Length: 64
Picture 1 (cartoon, rainbow, N blue to C red):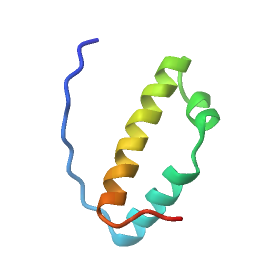
Picture 2 (cartoon, helix red, strand yellow):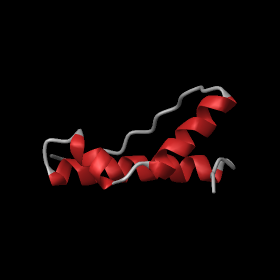
Picture 3 (cartoon, helix red, strand yellow):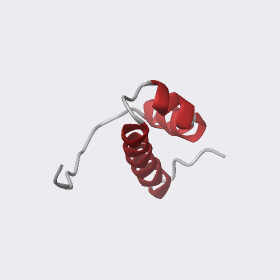
């Protein structure tokens, strides 16, 4: 598959942002793997989740 970067923009409430950040902090490989068809797909999902987590942290939503 050819890689094409896509930028997305969403509007969430502050509570939704915090809860999403909490989820991304807590989710682990087995959670992704349980919903993926392969290890490779799970790693792709992890990469996407980490990019979102990083963007949330850049905006000040980085739960400890």
